[in-house]
Length: 465
Image: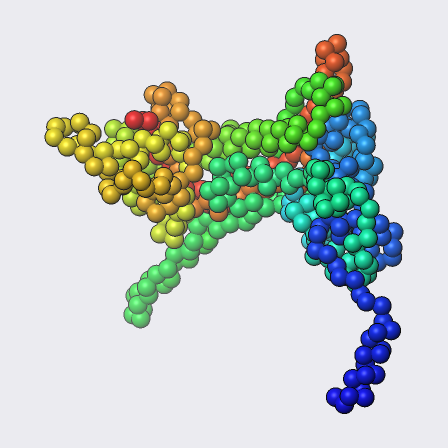
């Protein structure tokens, strides 16, 4: 480029106002987006709900359901009404006008019904996902929008919206993904169970092949018999939403004056208790109003083609020994590669500490039989026979003689858990009114089942010794 053209370009650039740099600080970007919320083209999900004084928290949901209206609840109420309008026609949710419906997992909000989009469901799911993402940092769409605007985000007064201008003293908004937290507390999800979104009507059917055809060799000679007819057999796994509920009393003072630490406590406890109850049902539930537990499925001692039952394995003298790990593996169908065990933690401790005899019979003073070269400096082992061990206190210790347990080995992605990503809150201020307490109840919908029960092997009546 010639010197003349360089001078012309420099003069032109000098006339253009310098584009301010866009800070990547999430609170500054949030402040900018809130300020421009009504600007055409601004992301629809940016709203007052994203401010730290109006986060959609479990605590505020409980308070609203109990008859209070904490500051900054307008957007939460609006979102609840939209969730009721979108899903109420398909699913028994939001029928009580005084309840508050909150999203517990963006991933498990259904968007289709019978192959057709549920009107408004995709927008709501995107909005919820983006709000949750904004809690962990600025959403990429927000950053793109702010960069296009090119405003100077640095020109801000002291406020709660900027970390370096006082905002670091204010707690962030709370919009947790409760189902993710709950899944982390469930043994089946830890073991690799497949989590799916239940359709809006709460029913999901999975067709499956339960028996194959038969193949034959046929000779050329006319007397040779022809091919014998055979036919495949099929079945279905039907998931129908079960109601999982939590009901607890809380003092009115706690609902009015508690801070976010109480919200975290309530949220964690609700997820933990619901997760434990769901696990118990998935392990040994009787069906009906609850899920049918895996160990209650019909069983068979061995597998043959067409066997769609959980496979039962018997340990010798009710004591789990090294050969039993391979023995349970051998019972499974050829095409099944197990990925995890489920057992009690104390049972796993006994297995890890099992020792061979040294000098006399049954003295248990020899080397560790499940980990021969273990040393005191080695980290805790979490695998048995190459598969992950998941422990849970929900596994019964009253089997067999009344003081025994069971051990499960299987391919857990064949266990399917269906969820609806909504939770509904309702309150009862009357039962304990004299004690100035409000009963808060919440419920969600879940079901689970085995696509192929033969993908699992059960060793029952095992002694914890």
